[in-house]
Amino acid sequence: MARFSVPLTFALAMSFAGCATERTTAPTIDVAPREGLNLQSPIMASVFDARSNITSQVEAIEVLKTDLTSIYGSNLEWVPYFEAVPSGRVAVRIRLDTLGASFGSRIISSAAYANTIQTAQFSATGPWGPVVGTASGSSSVFATSFSGEGWWNGAAWVDLEIQDNRGATNTAFTVPFVAEHRESNMWGYSSGDKAAKTAWKQVSAQLIRGMDAVLRAVRDQE
Image 1 (cartoon, one colour):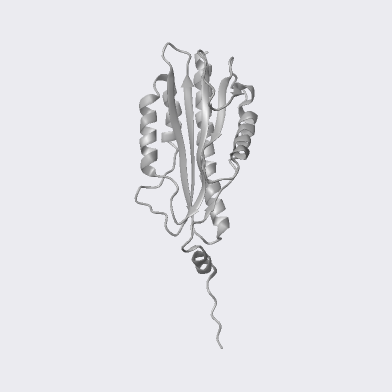
Image 2 (tube, helix red, strand yellow):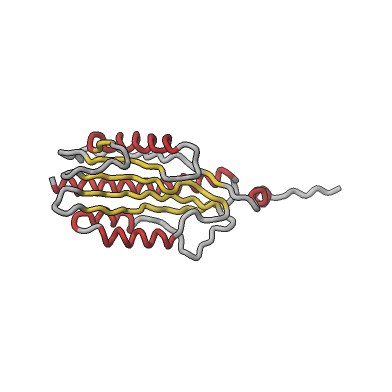
């Protein structure tokens, strides 16, 4: 009796049909320390993991804090996320909103990103304009018409809130760093892991460019 083999890609695709499958990844950042970028007064910094679909927010927070400390050293003074910013100080609050991959559906909304970046461009005036430019010029978000069916849809979204209380009028705005990356289901969960890691790699690069711009703006005004 003849035997018929089912192609691997088809079998894998069928194994995920009808179920919502998600993957995640660690928010590591591997870049060189920023030598020569030294501030007279450190920036207050904090990290918050706002995701609701994971078991341990603490782990991701510590990973981000450790890597950012290795990059910026004593330029960052780590404080609790909701601590008030006193007069004469600058603070950055990093909020991890999305990080992972979902099979068959998108995780983020391109319309929501467009609205958020438009608000940031309106609010970030003067020396803070280049910080917003690092997001609007490098984020990679699919068109609204892309549904994501049949793909592993990786996404990462990090909000960088800047609060500047050094002037007569306080300035506060939030910059979104967002990326999406899709992978076919050829390798099953490995494809999902790759989609999540690639999206995070893009967003982490944007975040570092944003942090660099913040530190340069503060240094140039000291």
